[in-house]
Image (cartoon, rainbow, N blue to C red; front, side, top):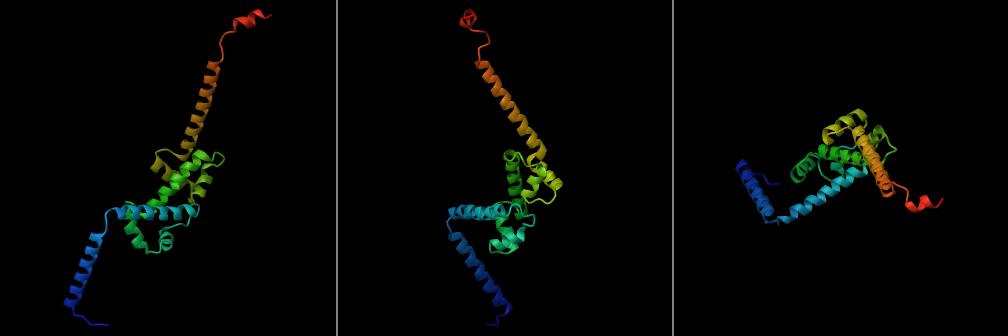
Length: 173
């Protein structure tokens, strides 16, 4: 190893930083969006594959992405404008929203557990904060809309039926 004086070390660091800046300036601008979407899809895939795992955390995702926790945080903040924990929470809440609408046989607690929440009350608080309504209200709203659509369909069918007897049916007796 070479022994450098403090001044030489500073000069070396300046040259390295200038090289990195030059290298970054020469990259085409559109590769960022491609890399960003690829990065996002990789992280999203990892979260969705381990959705029901309550122990899914930033360290696990960083390990799966072959990077340090701090690198993952920096890249996610830069590329996706959110923290890794918020990204995990958003994916889980969106999955829960879909489950609440599609899986009628599951109660709210079961949906919470399937989306990686270990506490249904915490799940409900996060869901309400994010979506503006509680999971139960989503379920009730869907039930009301379904019932309304069924009733509307029945009314539509009733309107298509004749209200009065046809004249020919009266004279057939």
